[in-house]
Image (cartoon, rainbow, N blue to C red; front, side, top):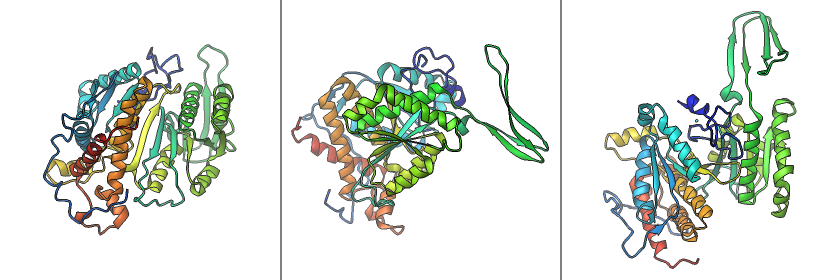
Length: 448
C-alpha cells in the first residue's frame, strides 16, 4: 500500500514523481512548488473522574466558534482511534462549528478500498490546505517538536527550549536496493539515460568472496522541496536552521543536499532570515549531534532520511516521551499542512481496551495534532477567535499535566517504576480533566 502511494506524484497531476504522497505516521509529503505534485499538585485520589464519562462540558452559554473553511480529518487504527474519537467528542465538537471532510484511513478501510481512500484524503488535503491525522498501521518532510511541561523531567536537562527536527522521509536507505553477494565477482552500477546516449558504468567493488551490496538514490526535486519546507518552518518559528550531512565522506551524494540547500537559501530565504535575525548553517552530522546535546535548544534541525528517523526518537526521549511530540508535514510554500501524533497506534493498550480493561494512554500528541491543524486553519483564514481557542486548548492540556493530572507514562517519569494508581489518570479521565480545564478558560473573557 505504501509503495503504491509513494509512486503517486505530488500536487495537481499525480503523475509519477518522487515528491509523492506517502504514509508510517506521516501520510504524505507535499511539494506545492513542484509541477507535480502550573503550581498545584494532584490529590492522592482521583475518583471524581473514575467511571464518569464526560457528556459535554460546553454549555449553551459558550457559543461554538464558526470555522470559516473545512479541514480534512484522517481517522486511524487501534487505541489511537479510540482516543481520537474521545478528543473529537469532548474537546473539538462542543466548541467548534467545523466542516470536516472525513476519511477513514484505518487499515480495514484502506484494504477495502484498495488504498483509494488514501489518495482521496491526500487530494482533499491539497484542496483545503489543512489536515489532521490519527496514527495508522510511511516520503516528505516530517517535522517533530516536543511539547514542554515544566514538571516532566528531561533526560537532557540542558534543553531549555524545544528543538524542531525535520526528517526528509524520501529515498536513501528507505528506497534502496540491497543484495547478498554469493561469491567472487565484480559489482557495477549502471545508469542508462532515458533519452539515449552512452550508459554510465561505475565499478563499485570486486568481491573475493561472499558479501553484501546496496544501491540507493535521491532526486533533486524532493531535496529542493525538503530545503524549502525546512526554511519555511524555520522562518515561521523565527529559529535558526541547521542541515546535517556527512558530505566529507559522501562528497557527491550528501554534497548534493548541501548544495541544493545553499542554493535555496541564497535565492529565496537569505534576506527573510536576516530580517528576522536568524540564520542557516550546514554542519556535519557527528558535529551536529554533539552540538544538540550541549545546546539549550531553540532551532530547526534538517536531517536526511535515516538521520531523521534516529534523531527524532533521540530528541523525543531526551525531552521526556514520544507521547509529548508533535508531528507535522508542511508544504514548501508553507500553505498546506498536515498534523498528526508522532506515536503509533498503541497496540498493547488497544488489546487491553478490547478486553474491557483499564488503559492509561497519553493523548497529548493527538490533542496537539488537532490544535496544530486548527492553528494553521486559523492563520490561513486570519481567524483570531479560532487561534484563541487553539491557544486555550494547548494551554489547558499542558496545565493539566503541570497540576499533577497525567497518564501513567508521564507519572512513571516523575515518580519512577513503583508509581501507585492514585498518581495517574486513565485514558478518558485525562481527556476529561483537560476538558474541564478548557471549559474554565473559555468562560474567561478573551484578551483578543
